[in-house]
Amino acid sequence: MKKIFVLGMSPLPFENDRKVYGTGVRTWQFILPLLEKGHRICVCNYAIPSAYADDFESDYKRDFIYTRDLKIKKEYAGSIFMKNKEWEAGRSHSGSEERSCRYSFEYNVLKKDDFENVE
Image 1 (spheres, helix red, strand yellow):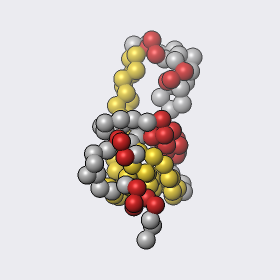
Image 2 (image 1 turned 90 degrees about the horizontal axis):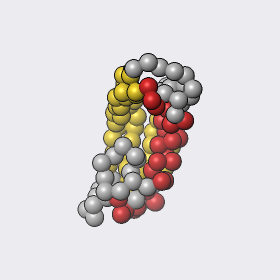
Image 3 (image 1 turned 30 degrees about the vertical axis):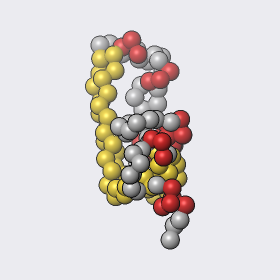
Image 4 (image 1 turned 135 degrees about the vertical axis):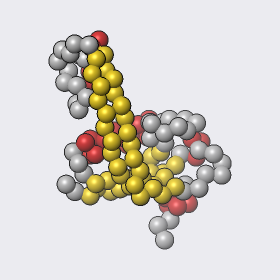
């Protein structure tokens, strides 16, 4: 297990903000596999201004928890979207199966001034 520092963009796809951008989705595509492998992650993301309120202040979370509960029905079992950790593509499953995961990581969402100035 390693500690890995990730610079990216926010909001991430699971955040409840005004907009979700491809750059946040792509950042999450880097983060999730690292978490699944058990690495310790420190994420510092630039807060895309149009996705946050005008009075947004940088947010520092030392122990951010991401959880997900999955209930996957058999009609999705062969889907390309369900491969990797959730399902193997082409594998058949009867009925549905419930799975959940919980990941903890350091998550910092920084407004422009804080992201650009590390002092």
